[in-house]
Length: 573
Image (cartoon, rainbow, N blue to C red):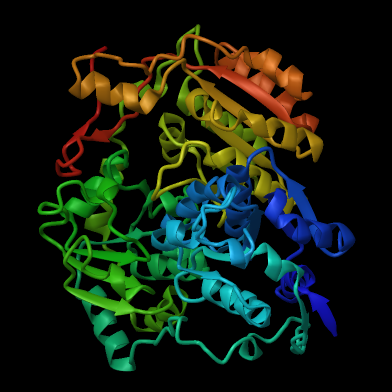
């Protein structure tokens, strides 16, 4: 059949099982939006208040569903507004396809109105990107983009389409459907040289890996986000339980292992638990699964697990020996590797090692239990959210103190229920991500934990949340400051709080009312318990304004660049 380029885009999205896209229209993408109008029964479009939120929403949709998220924007500023969202997805290995439309091909390179070389701009922050100048290449470009986005180590792919290409006519040949009803990827494009083919380790390499684990006396697992991407949570649990190996987690992996499990030591690194940081430091084997040894995890690289062997398993060979030198490594899919490894791993009690771990678990800052009559305690806040939201609710965050408190205190139990910006640390990520998650999981609940500093960057999306009646509860952790930055100013800048105190508007209650969103405020723990339950039970968009003391700190804390076992457990105001 002969159709125009815009209809090709629709047909290719439908082929790939896409049911929802997030975006914002503009002049050069009008042809595609016209096609969306005509095909509204096939593809749902969510109009965000800003293109950046569209990218974050596509990212949240992808992380929570395991499918490729799709966002779109027009040329120029529309395209550049996607950049932060694309970079966020890139740093956290999230499969997103971003569609932009540029000026017509004959206007490229002439500083045309709203022209930008978006493929040049996004080259460092995409897994791959394309500009399609020939209508004949459009369908296969889309098919290849989806393969690239979700194969191997996932990541964002951008497709830029000049406006005249979206209007041009072409003979379109649909892909044949496979046995499961989906379009066969094998037909998509014979040119797979851009797609990394993942090889599996040999049997001898698997046996050698098992031997390393069996010979260790004080092993610890350092689980990263790759465990979640691979879907290897069950294999991780089986390995840990069979060999009695404690599991520490990166920020991106806080939901890959049940928090209540006896072998879980929670987060490792700068704001990690005493059990995780001391466990890594005193171990004789660190088994790193799908982790990238971030600077926020390792502290001083020369002293990270200095008495241990480091054994790294990752799908991306570029991560091996990048930040930490390893003693052994395997490259491949974590789920597949663990399935082969588990039968060869020996059962061991490790009672002495686990006793040490249990002793470190008891070392917690005194501030955890402090109750102030005129503020909400962060630990109480997160535990209360869990009390009413349960294990299956999705929890999103912005970036800052509230993010670290969520990682420290929320007892995650189910995979893919924690969505946050790890690698890029994007303030403004969480609200868009929460929208994408709620759209992708309409039968689940979403609670968004937001700092008052971060929420200033995306509170305009309240109009999107209200318009689509997304029952997201936003817990505003309102301490009147850019909390994480204030901590650093306190420690390293002699308490010179330069431009971090937020003692000015907006009036959050009036702002919520302006957008038609319900609001309530909590000044202490008792009030928070009552108002959060009310908000959660309402099943409507809601802001819960929780007033937290401006001087609440994140403890424990390892000083940046210092060994992670040298943690601050308390400090004076």
